[in-house]
Image 1: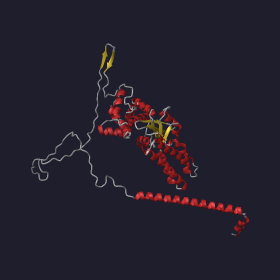
Image 2: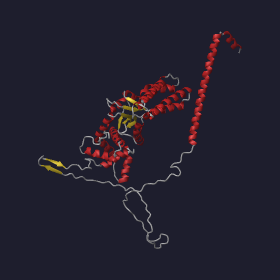
Image 3: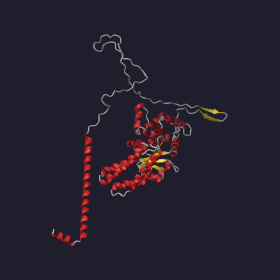
Image 4: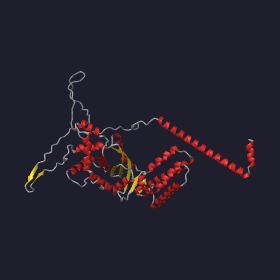
Length: 456
């Protein structure tokens, strides 16, 4: 203690002041770190208590609320057959009964087991004296040349495979049990490959329409062909869906799908490959908010909480501006949009010490021009939910099957799903349209007939 006093007495006044200030700063730093640690621990305890409360809370009871009027299945409008059940004697005492006093009706709907219909087409051939050659009668409207499976089987296989997500072994069992049709898995797979080749002209028509669309959503997910990693890409909008399976996840695939001269708006997530396209874009704000939420669950520092709150307010103001657009004049809307861009840019340019804020600022500074496109152009969504919804059926198929065993199978997958999902987006009859197109193309008609690219 005396040695410490002697050391202080030997220092000058300025040195003592510097020492005191340095120690005060160290004390403040220690207090700040202690507060951050206590805040982080408090937040962990709060989140843990919240999770426990969610587990303990009783789940909502299913069904409608008490007192809600009941509902039942509507009775069929047509009756195919009527079966009357009568009695002559009482089942208890066996005494003779009087005439019927009333009739209790009970309507029941059921499935009739299907059967395979085998059709033999006899095409007569004739000798033409004028042409001096043999001529044959044309194909029937339901006939598929050189095919042992009819169009109903093939189109139903497409729907079961790519809409309901059933693997070929399940489809084989369904045909066998439902209608006694015996067919192998390989025959079904090869038939769909040939079917996709005949319908490729319709898929080309979809691709042309995609490249001419003013707005496109894009996304990608992992795929597998015979054990080799690939990627399934989609390019969709409200009326069209196009899929491509490729070995690459690079920007070249997106360029091939959109073409060299695409001038529309591209809605995507923050994957770096889309940045190399140089297109006007809208980045998915849902992905951004999800990232912000993940950071908020990990970080409870005062700096992060302060600027995270400001960022949330900016994004919330952007959503409110979109909602109130019809009520505002063009001048007021443009002024508020300009102010929003300034706030977003200034938030991104700030020099942060927090690592999570640095990551967010880096992303915002890189993409801030593409975060508010939905306010600049009417009809552009602020999210990429459509692309994610349209890619989800493929994820289900991926989880239920071994994906594709060959390049031909992958090509059939991308072609047939493009047609199927486009027809569904346009509220078309998938079975009738695919069947009509397949028969026409098999019988020699080459131009596209489904008119999927037309805007109606």
